[in-house]
Structures are given as structure tokens and as C-alpha cells.
Length: 192
Image (cartoon, rainbow, N blue to C red; front, side):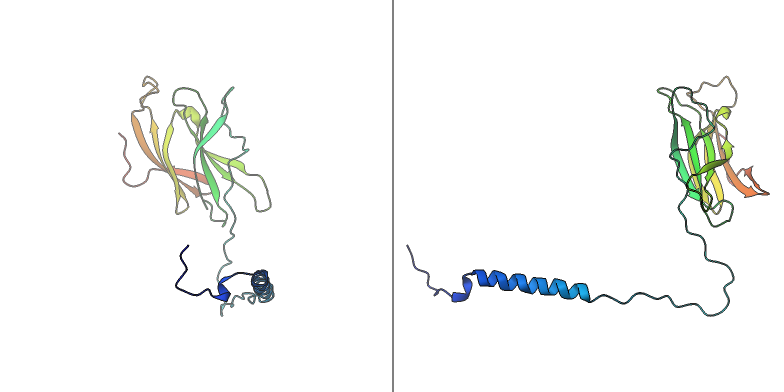
């Protein structure tokens, strides 16, 4: 066995007292950190009169457990798309849901529904139907922008067009006005 050229140092051997000292130091740091806490934050009030109240920050209504007004027979209704935003200017967001029957084959038509939830309610409800499934329309996209619902729709020019092949593309915009949703066509929209 070859001897090391460097002499052994006494401090390189760990002994139980080293472990006890290390554990005591760590426990002291943990105990001290639990006693030293930052001061609570305070917000400075803006000077001058407030012109309007702060917006209410609530979550948009969920789509789970909603009884949508769509007839699906033995299959269930399926939410395929949704968008949220404040549509009526009350400071609380609404949810726009695109719903169709979960059919095993084909492309079932979509319904578009607006959901709202009261300030003190725990359950959302359907308050408007923007697109009825009876219109044989499929929703390609949906969004809420500047308080308006924008959608790209595919439909049929007549009842003779097969369900596989929609031949009309349309853009629609719904805006809350006079206590109801008014439909219009956004600028630059056209049919195919």
C-alpha cells in the first residue's frame, strides 16, 4: 500500500459532534427565519375623486352541469368551444358556449348560447341563444372582443346540400343593445 504524500489532517474526519453542530446551526436558522417576517403591504390611496368604481373581478361562468336547450336524444350535449368576456357592461364576464350533440358519426349542427351568473349565485344559466341548432350551422371560430361576440359560421344554401359539404361561410357579430343581442355582419365579411 502506498502512503499519501500529504499528511492526514485532523479536521477531515467527521465525528458525531460535527453533525450535531451542523444540525444545531440549521435549526437556529430555520427558527430565526420564522420569527422575522416582512411587514404587511399597504396600498396608497390615490388623491382626488374617483370617477367610477373598480371593476368587479369574478370568474366567467363555467359550462359544467348546464342544461343547454338542445335536443340530443340518447347522446349528451358537448361543449366544443367557448369564449368569455363582459358582454353587457356590468363588470362581470359572460361565457359564450358552442354546443352540439355528441353524435358517433357525422357533423351535428352547433348551437351558440350565452351563459351568465349572478353576483351571489353559484350556478350559471343560459340567458340567450345566438345560433339555434335547427339552423344547421357549424361554428368554426368564436371570440369575445370589445363586448361583442364574433363568429365564423358554416352553413347550407338549401336543404338539398348534403350535410357533409357546407357551401356557405358567414361571419356574424352579436352586440348587447336594448336589452337583447343584435346580430350584424362585421366589416370585411363575405360568403363563399
